[in-house]
Length: 293
Image (cartoon, rainbow, N blue to C red; front, side, top):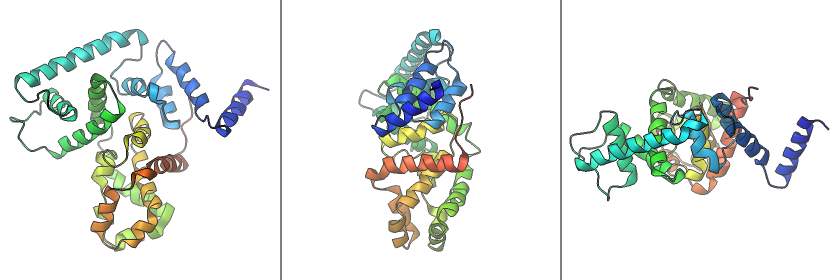
């Protein structure tokens, strides 16, 4: 039996006995042992498979440019990142913008505002829409990343990626959503249009906030694996799958307001299945990335 056929046999066996992902975890560990991490291969892996939780923060930090590809630099770079974090936090405490009682996600927001030159004159000023997006993502990230320094840097770079790399793509996602929903279930899209709900769907929650506050973090992190590694289009298929999953409920609602309200507060117990089906749908329509050797 060749090495490849042995590997394929093991993969099938592991899946049958409930250990799906064992081979994938080994593949990732091999990639992470390289002296210089191959970001292209890490991206490809993250696009194809969910990241094991024990490696997620490390892979995200590398892909978001928080850590360099070279292993030997990681400790020193994170030391600088921590020093910068503490300096900015100290500055905010000195000017009394935050205190020990300030919620952590808000602390991250004020740090981000200060570093990007957008700190308002007073903490009592109302938040801008972009601040609300940052806050929602930061709150979700808190549940995924334990270390506060890591959490701040990952949130900051994740939001920057949305505002730069995906800046032109995100406004196009509602149109893509209608396109793929039409392919999967044209009758459902027709119902949304008849109810005048199509333009009023919670697109900001879905696409600007990347489902933060909509899906539980345990499911959300599998979606964000794809966003971090280069695809914001996965968000479209999560939205499509939400509609397909709750088709009967949505078809029974006859006003845009009721449909939107329901979609903003979907039942959480279906989220794992929704994300799994959404990833399958994404691969079906967009193909599966292949490791470059």
